[in-house]
Amino acid sequence: MNKNYEKYFIKPSIKNAAKRTKKRVEIIRKDVVIPDRLKQIAINKTYCVRTFGCQANERDGEIISGILEEIGYKFESNPEKADLVILNTCAVRENAEEKVFGTMGGLKKIKNDNPDFIFGICGCMVQQDDIVEKILKKYPQVDLIFGTHNINNIPALIDNAYFDKARVVEVYSKEGEVYENLPSKRENNLKAWVNIMYGCDKFCTYCIVPYTRGKERSRLMEDILQEVNDLKKSGYKEITLLGQNVNAYGNDLNLGYNFADLLNEVAKTNIDRIRFTTSHPWNFTKEMINAIANNKNIMPYVHLPLQSGDDDILRKMARRYTIKEYVDLYKEIRNKIEGVCITTDIIVGFPGETLEQFENTLKIVDELKYDGAFTFIYSPRSGTPAAKMKDDVSNKEKHERFNRLLDIVNKHALDRNKEYEGKILKVLVEGPSKRNPNIFSGYSENNKLVNFVGNPNMISKIVKVKIKKAKSFTLEGEAIG
Ligand code: 5AD
Ligand code: SF4
Image (cartoon, rainbow, N blue to C red):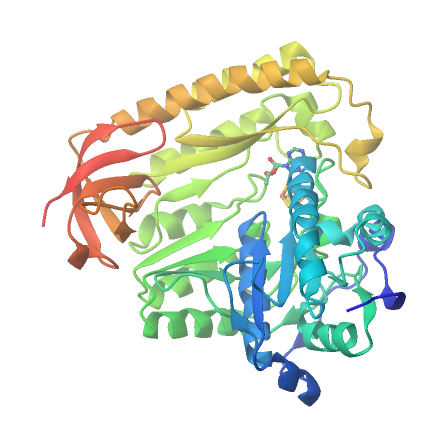
């Protein structure tokens, strides 16, 4: 297709994306509309969706695939063979964006070989004005750009790109809505993501998410429960409740229920395993801790992002808690929830972080002994408040701090894992190892990855595994019946 003119432009604006005016957003229950002529052309065509980034993006990818299948496209895992490729992107750090630009460059060739090929980019990255400008200028192979608020309109966008032979850009920068009833094609038939809310209003100063995903907005509890019940009926064993900050669930609805209530209600569906992510340490309530501790099917695992171990840096990050408050919460979670594992996120080299402030992070990490941690080098995101601060920690210093932190994190991960040697864990078995057909793997209740000697009948079941050996990132063992 020769796209020599550009049409249908609604470009993003990071500035508009920061506005928060609505108290409550609309819940939209309309079916997606598919133009007949698009159904006709999709009949013998294939699609491939590549997703980068977090679980919210994974879930969006499933919905995008669901819409494409409803149009009539068939799944093709190899992007080089597909007629329609969509890259569902992440903007949280610059290296995530570099990966996408690399993939975009790599797909240039197919464009030349298949004139009907449609190449689309969506997700958080294209919510940024400068990225869209860069793609339009430097990547003529891209036909279609749509934002996180435009997924429901994919059929019309593809229709325009195909029949009008135009480059199509539709990226709204707004607070957003809640869409129910969108089709979806789930990636896994054992474990499912369930959105409970969208967006974020925390505006941590380093983070692009509140700008790329809009306002905090919750789904109604009845819609979530319906989805969990349907998943259970279709044989799913585990669900993960998703939100940028699940603690805020319900605040925008004003219906008298909150995240702890939701946890208790979801537990009553009796689905085997319930997980949730992510919890901000700021409004993690005692009721939430009780709900996790008191319901057997809510898994004893909490991801509790620390970000920094220094009060001044936390203030500059606008994280809303002090180290003392964080440590108190952490200890309460450890004390009240039996067998709990706790992991975290930490950023090194935030603007102005001194060596002493970084060492405060090391001290806390050494004291708390996490089960695991995702560690990141600070990456300025244009449009965020931190991007205006002086990024004055040198690259070399950032890497040195990163490596020092990683050593401590890995040491504690191994020590924590060693405590399980000789113990029995319940594992939801996902499948055999690629290298050895007698070794199976799955996650324990507290989210440890376990590789063990078992048999194919165990797949999709929860089995007891005796742990023989601990490594930093995995446990090894043998199924015991
Ligand atoms: N630079 C580095 N890490 C970041 N994160 C979010 N924004 C940035 C940034 N600008 C990290 C935080 C968050 C995780 C998902 O990504 O630690 O918890
Ligand atoms: Fe980003 Fe903070 Fe919101 Fe998490 S809570 S998505 S780090 S702004």
